[in-house]
Image (cartoon, rainbow, N blue to C red):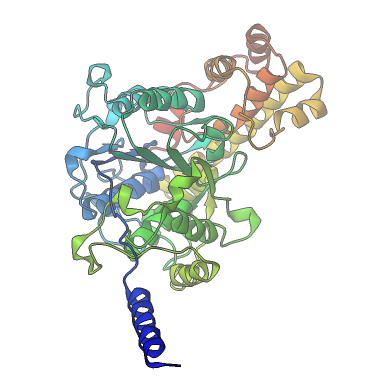
Length: 489
């Protein structure tokens, strides 16, 4: 090799080394515009403590991430922190050893203002459609991101609200389509904690609306409460008599507490949360699902929940490469210190509350007798709901066995719950009116799939009304009785 060739070789080597040591291109950690968030606890009453605790915890994550109160809208009935059943008045905790998450949370839409209509108006930024509340809405623009987190009870095709009508999948989607048509956001992320939450998006949310949804459960299974009584110190302290969180919710919330959102993508959190939520057997865990525009999952969490400047991370983060080994490390980190508390089906969490009241009451006391009555009444109501819907199905769908098969039928993935959403809503409302009220937490809500399948089978509203009158003669549960009488703390 001559002198010229040698010189050229070393110059090439030097330039190659310099290039390889250059930092990776910086990745943006936030949107061009503003981060907005809506937090919804869709239930009320002390025995649903966990939903408001989840939402309050989420608020503090967003606040720590730099979101201003003007850009965070909170829905919750706000009847738990100062409930007579709360052993720590004015305080909510989201895990057994947790600190207070209630303090400082805005009370935008509480009590009778915590409704589906107000929820829709807030999403659309429509102040004129609001009834009560703070008047705060998501007044977002084309460069903004929107994060919606919902925690409550649900069923096929709907999720509950503390007051008034449920949020139906089709209604929510129509609202989101209006928001999209108005070019009022750049991208949106929805986290939903509820039973059968997948049915709110599967076959309903298109992939071209710049919306990414993650659900606690698929279209046909329960989601699970966590940190429940009976497992202390892994679960709630005994004097709480209720579950402190929900498994999907505490998984994403605690993951967000532990990691810098500038170094974690939505996809990485999805995998970590999915694996933690499925930490137990099939009988006590659910399948976390994702819907909509899944390319959004490659974005950093910081685009939606913000980031803490004091976290010690760089202002920009290197390109994140998703690998299996990364997920394995994250899973090890996320689960290393998890107390092995037993998850409880959302629909059975109220039984845990009632059983705890009964077991802790003094033998022979009036309190013990009342606790026993409440527990027996709830068990009776469940049996009654099972029998009613089975009788209705048998009358309308050709006998008991055929009815059971048709009512439990689940459509293939990618297909909406029902063909005619107006039929579905009218069937749910008719069943509520003729047979029983279905507040967001009540067991009978689980039969919304049966009503959807009756619509799909061609049953008419007239036929359903006639069947309900036969199956539920003079046996309707009065509105409010379920909560006011049976579950009053």
